[in-house]
Amino acid sequence: MDKKGFSQHISRQYNEDLEQIITGVMTMGGLVEQQLEAALDALVNGDQAQGEKVVTSDYRINAMEVELDEACTNVLARRQPAASDLRLIVAVIKAITDLERIGDEAERVGRMALHLLEEDRQRSPMAEIAALGDQVKTMLRGALDAFTRMDAEQAVRVAQEDIKADAQYDSIIRHLMKYLEDNPKSVPPVLDIVWATRSLERIGDRSRNICEYVIYFVRGKDVRHTSFEQMAAEATGDRR
Amino acid sequence: MDKKGFSQHISRQYNEDLEQIITGVMTMGGLVEQQLEAALDALVNGDQAQGEKVVTSDYRINAMEVELDEACTNVLARRQPAASDLRLIVAVIKAITDLERIGDEAERVGRMALHLLEEDRQRSPMAEIAALGDQVKTMLRGALDAFTRMDAEQAVRVAQEDIKADAQYDSIIRHLMKYLEDNPKSVPPVLDIVWATRSLERIGDRSRNICEYVIYFVRGKDVRHTSFEQMAAEATGDRR
Image (cartoon, rainbow over all chains, first blue to last red; front, side):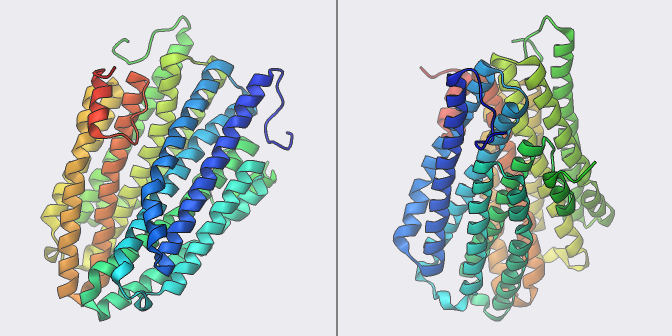
């Protein structure tokens, strides 16, 4: 496999089609990263402008998903790709669904952040939430990076980071529950923070999904619903 | 288009491949419905055996997803489908992802139900939750039915039902928030009910996604991220 992660073809047009799709995924991924960044800024620092930006920009990600889906279907129809090209297209079709949903979760975080503008954010475990935000932002970055380079080993490393994100999430929810018990009058804002935290955790899950498609592409092996150990073995080709 | 929703082919084997995939989706859909049914029984009636069944049976749905994904990739590689056959395969690849996630949400509801066994469920708005459960169960049934018959008009009707599910969800969450304010010592169990309710709402969203793939298949038109009015116009062919 060459550096671009897909084989060279006799038809230059075909190559261009595939490269355009990969570039499209990267552009879409970049947009999703910007949205997540802005959502975290709104949530953690109470930046209203950033929150409003997130809520009004999601449509661009949706449009890109539809466009890329069409491009993939066109390549399937006109080029009848086989082997690794086919796996690439299937991986893209799946990855863009997750990217679009990450965009939705970022929008949700932005919306919750706007609800919380009037609230005293010192009460909530905002430092912990910021750390979870950083963790899933790094995971998303790593997943996109692994996807661009079709690097299965990096994909495994990023997927494993989800363990940390889940632990951070559990800890924040425990703190929020304790806070609710002591401050029953704060139910609505605290529940908004719960939703935002949940969305961040889901972004970690979905970044992990993207990593699984990378492993599927590189190894031709479906590693969804397997343990991290199996996933690592598949990615490095240790198995069988 | 014939009753099966895909055109007849010269190769009998090809036909069989496509029919097998559709049958597989239906079998997977049936399993997911059973899981949702059992999860609701566990949540609403406190049936422990049903809750345990849900939590231990999800792997079967996961296995079916992987199997069907492979079958679709094989048809793409060996049969190089075009036009409506290609759209069918793409619709299946997308629909099974949603079905698998509906299975995950049902498992989550089952797990929350097991947490709640020791609790006095009379305090929570269980009748309302049962009604939301019925609503999303009906939506899932309708979505699977529309998918089997590739009936775009039914798909629109089912997708529109999501408005009702969202309203039911909002009302339950409002009641739970009020309850939390008055009963701060009940935070953990009430939050479990919040999660279960959220999962039910997501099952409605995902059933709606499946309907959108049916419309995509029948009309060759992507209706994601559009309004219900646009969706209905596309499904009935009113537009342009």
